[in-house]
Length: 121
Image (tube, rainbow, N blue to C red):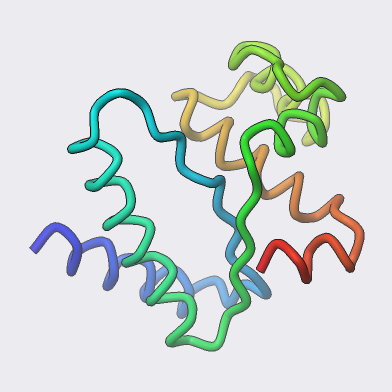
């Protein structure tokens, strides 16, 4: 049911906003394999929803996202949030950190050269 909820939710967002692309950050695989598996399943639901709507999907390594937004591939989360705020002209740093991360991935995709966007797909 959880994966169906994610899938249908993404379908609804795609229908409402008609994006040109879906960009995701590649998964970080930590010490807990159960968490990695759950995240992978959720990402799969997102990718299938986007693909079934004919939306191009791209994935970027965390270091590439940080490099694009902060100019440094090992930037801390706080720095990413501050740079997202500055780039987008926001009044506040996006909260929670996941919101700032998602916006950073979108910025990375928007700034990526066309060839890099094609290869990231």
